[in-house]
Image 1 (cartoon, rainbow, N blue to C red):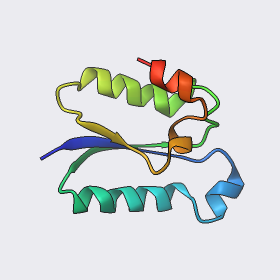
Image 2 (image 1 turned 60 degrees about the vertical axis):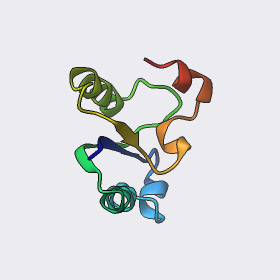
Image 3 (image 1 turned 120 degrees about the vertical axis):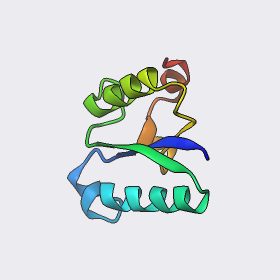
Image 4 (image 1 turned 60 degrees about the horizontal axis):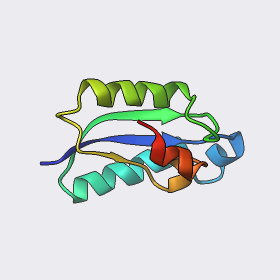
Length: 94
């Protein structure tokens, strides 16, 4: 069974209130994991802009992955813009 992390993010109150809330994203991703028979190790919830990776919860996610590297098979998010607004930096990020 694959094991992974769920990362959900909103950057504005409008996003949170117009059908793309943290709860909605998390629910969708949990259903995907259930369908794929994958185990969710941890859920990280963020309410910061994705303009860079200096986000508190994202930094916790990185630390978790580094300290559990043999356990984490994937990081799942609903859309690329929930993960990062800067594709180039995202691909370079350790």
